[in-house]
Length: 279
Image 1 (cartoon, rainbow, N blue to C red):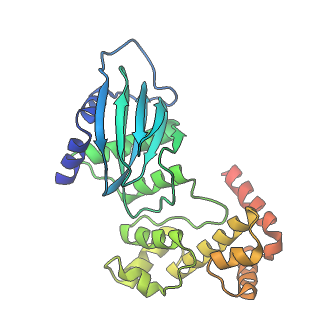
Image 2 (cartoon, helix red, strand yellow):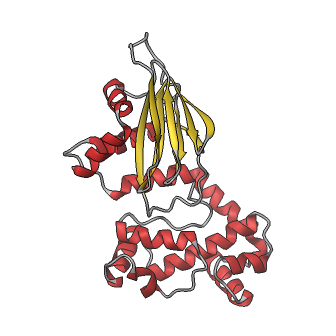
Image 3 (cartoon, helix red, strand yellow):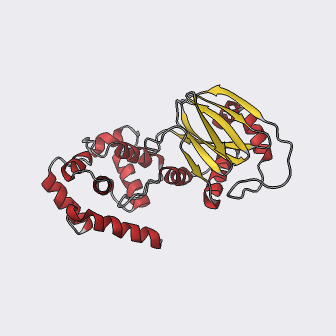
């Protein structure tokens, strides 16, 4: 309760007007009907150090400055504001912009400040569910909503990558491995920072991804190498960046996982692309 109230105060009148004005959401421009008398709003400069921020422009437009750089946010789009970035907003008349807060520790990668994405119907529903979770005193969404949101904005499911777990502790471990696939620490050291037993995290990974933590790590490393090969990275460097110091061991692991040697990586990528297109 206190956490949500704090979030409301952080956005001030902008949130109040946005929450009051938003009605049934339709993807696309978000524009419909005559003017509703929604006033323009200026949100003074602020910094969120304890979370990331996703701004969803449902209607109208917003001019924003991120670390002094100007951006324009149009209806039917979201904009990424990473934690620690100074930002101020000028919300236009007849405009509705909604803040969606994303907690630290999720595997968001290195998204740049000001990155924008269009919002379709499914994305709009997901964003509304997140807003409902953040501003309702009685509703509590599971971590799965945040995982889906991260999947949307990062395009994380690249060829061969294993699914993300949903539990907070398992997600924190996954975030460490995503940030540095070559991290040499044993699993017990990776798990130590989430303050639950390794057995608990192992159970979460197996129940939520179908993989043990060790196998999830292996699949992620091989997927990292596969995507680097697809991007033109030399084989030895791709293996090293994915955590393999021995190229022979990497070749063996790659073939065991994908059924072909690394030299035929394009066949593997095509296979995953066909599966994605059919799903």
